[in-house]
Image (tube, rainbow, N blue to C red):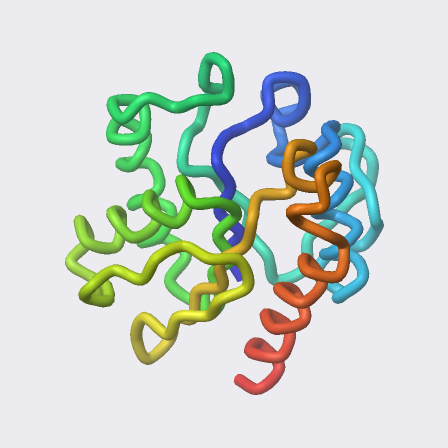
Length: 174
């Protein structure tokens, strides 16, 4: 499974060197991953804390924290090269969970640039929706586990669990 977020958080991954490590979004994500057997512990504060992912790779549309948490188009375009390279290397990914609208658009653009199938018309972003993109890949879209979404109730634990329950089901079915 590939999880695609927006960018390293300034005081999380930017500081710790591992995506979603050391910030509240990561706390929310790792608890869900742990509940569904995708990682060894429910939290991660630093790279050396023992957390191990299981059949999961986590990356981001951007590889630096954007000013004001608002990425510019040029930043997204510059970083898409890295996303394309990751997608090509990760050739056994069967489920992609995109966290947020920006990650969804970045993923679809990277697929298009790689000349991989992209639905036409492009599906609109909505939480908890699955899209079968080719013989191998299903994408599940989710709201990002940012504090803005989790503290306002836009994204609840139950909603996030549904995403990873679906991912686990798809991976188990083979």
